Length: 113
Image (spheres, rainbow, N blue to C red):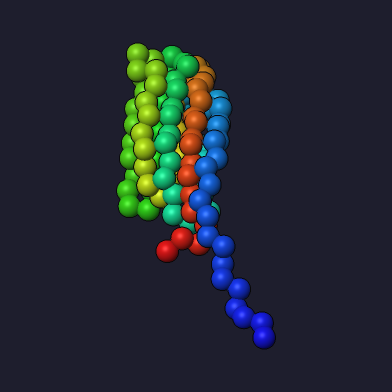
């Protein structure tokens, strides 16, 4: 007699990265989007390598956290639960370009209760 197969549950960690490259004109651009419903914990590091301010909006299931990195504040790291999206807006002198990097250590669970 064949029984019902129990789902195999597991956790895994991936390292993701994205290069920030956009004009310093206030336009928002999404660099990470999680379309799953899996529970996760993420360590997000953002680096500003430009003369513009980088404003990162880190969206979770519960809130949107806004972090501003100025040319003087080159790096910011935050750990969040249930990361859904990271969007960046660059603000600064017209005509300048914004450069930086986003690193995400993303630990997620498949079929965990």
